[in-house]
Length: 252
Ligand SMILES: [Zn+2]
Image 1 (cartoon, rainbow, N blue to C red):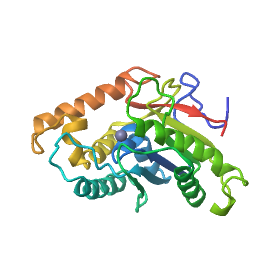
Image 2: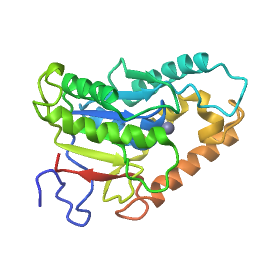
Image 3: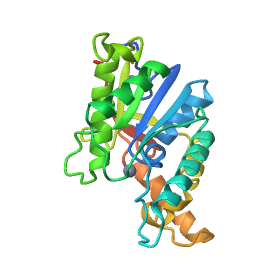
């Protein structure tokens, strides 16, 4: 068995050893909390340094056509910072600030990811799976490619030599995985931390959590139950586990 796996041979692709540092790269404020918030909270509680990088400003994340995009972007930065704090992440969050819905995965954006990876030197990078089939939102696809292409460029010294000393993360975990093969189990206490972090994204209650009254406790409980059953049903290992699932990439 490889050294990065636990000794639990019944679930060989479960629960990495807690890394010393992890960088999560998301397209919008809240993607990281949905994709890997439980894993980050679990690791942070065990001493892992957690970094958030958010590619877009989230300025179009609403169903209300009267909302001012600039004001929404400001609000979402605050929400994302609070969510990162709840998970035990390092503040400040890195915001690249690209316009929501218009993210590209070109060289300019890749350089920004390389700069962040070389500065933060994460042991593990977590990101959207860019190869998820039939996913429509282009920002998620581009953010995924920025993460995978950024890791390749950050690890080799002749790529972007002007951006500092090269750094090779040891692994990647891709959420929304097209072909998931790894799970991180989440205990009840950590599930509550993920839930609190998601609730920090109050501007997204209606569009992503199905809650249209901020003070409606019944709707919040229903959201919690949906999240709980999604995390239980998606588990790859023992039934009944709460888990976040990923594609694990070890050849970085
Ligand atoms: Zn998103």
